[in-house]
Amino acid sequence: MRLNRSLMAATAAGSLLLISACGSSDSPKGAPGGSGFTPPKLSAQKTLGTSEGQVNLIAWAGYAEDGSNDPKIDWVTEFEKQSGCQVNTKTAGTSDEMVSLMKTGQYDAVSASGDAGLRLIASGDAVPVNTGLVPNYKDVFPGLKNKQWNTVNGVSYGIPHGRGANVLMYNKEKVTPAPTSWSVVFDEASPYKGKVTAYDSPIYIADAALYLMKTKPELGIKNPYALDQKQFDASVALLKEQNVNVGEYWSDYLKEISAFKSGDSVVGTSWQVIVNAAQAEKAPVDAVLPKEGATGWSDTWMISAKAKNPNCAYKWLDWIISPKANAQVAEYFGEAPSNSRACALTADKNHCTTFHAEDEAYWKNVHFWTTPIDQCIDGRTDTKCVPYAKWVQAWTEIKG
Image (cartoon, rainbow, N blue to C red; front, top):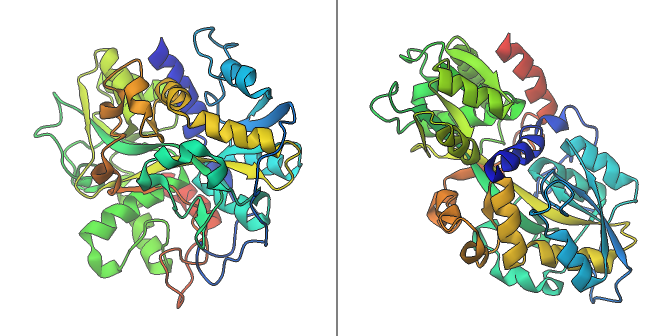
């Protein structure tokens, strides 16, 4: 039951995560650290004051469980008792919704995904975070600190929550030998025509770009989210070729599991938590991080520049990445925790091994979702990159 619930949370949060930026006018016009992206001048809080008595959160489903969905799943109640801060949570279904809600000034903190984070920073809706006021930050895995989606010009704008990779799942009985490359889904001559599955989102274009980055170095792709027009066109062309092999584009985890159980799908992109669920239902599947690497996702807790309860917000940020709470949310949601000490506290002692929480070498091959913007986030200044709105348009064409 725990696994099914974590899948529901993952679906609510993950499958909608990046389809949210469609043509948003709030998209930043520059890149972290680049000359085209200068956030408003805001300062981080210097000291903690008296608790205000409450904190208003915007969160993905499964990130702030208080026992109301399952009495056994509750890391909010203890926080309220220890901090004196009552937690009021607004569950959001998309990043666009999170961005809009943050603009109202009614919320203190948000569990922003990579695409929402940059927009909140650029618009001045997220304030820099003083990590010194978050004692548990010292135990956050180094691979999650100072990244493009949570840091600009060396200034931190949030506290990492967790991470996950988009892995290659395959039917062990039908796909032999075991695949080691994304070529099994991108090769037009794939022997699994009609039984390939792909993630149904414009951000999947980055998966094609990553494959081309490794197989066609002459294109000069350095970052799958920073594509000039030529690189973008090549990625779109690859996906149009792949379309003839795709039997189903998935966004519903139940449909993907069902397709692998029935044999309608035998290979394609997935999440580790989905692989685990499929195996639990006796589907003959396994998963691999291919030699080219993979795309992935990471969420960050950010504080509103208009927060009315900033002291309680800081207490929540420290709590949600504390070892015990971070272990609980990571296991319930189905992800790798951000706190290195959380692994010793998961109920399933193999959780962190399964989700590669402590394997930094593994994460070096994962390119985390970041909003494509016209300022190339790979450092180029002599060209413009294709923004996400164009990715959305292209995705419709790719699927025909």
